[in-house]
Length: 149
Image 1 (cartoon, one colour):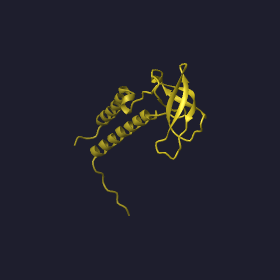
Image 2 (cartoon, helix red, strand yellow):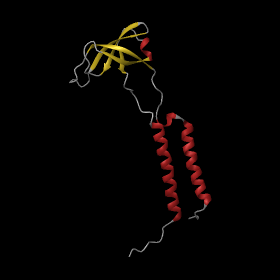
Image 3 (cartoon, one colour):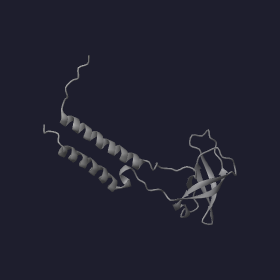
Image 4 (cartoon, helix red, strand yellow):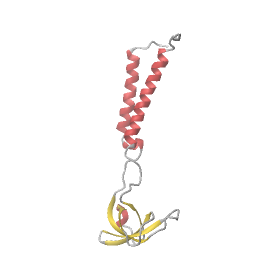
């Protein structure tokens, strides 16, 4: 096995940094899609409440968007008849005809967290560091045993 020199350690460090920079350059799609669906928040009125004992409860809501009164389905339960809530309407809802539009509560965000990219990069850095440490230990070879008295 070749001796462990600063050149060997430098190459290992350079390759680890190159991998991290290449992952950063690839962009946000490496650790997941960061495209966020465009949506508008509007007030709505619950027209048909749902009982929470149903496993897939959906309520019907009425809202106004672009000067038109529209109806939508809200995946949820527990609201009262004619209760005012804030909903998030997808941007493509204006083109929808008279059909029901699928909406979400405005306080919730469907999809994934924005922490995936920094956490993914941190894990990549840790894996590069642990790989370099393992290569160092393999190249160094076994050490003498310490006598325990």
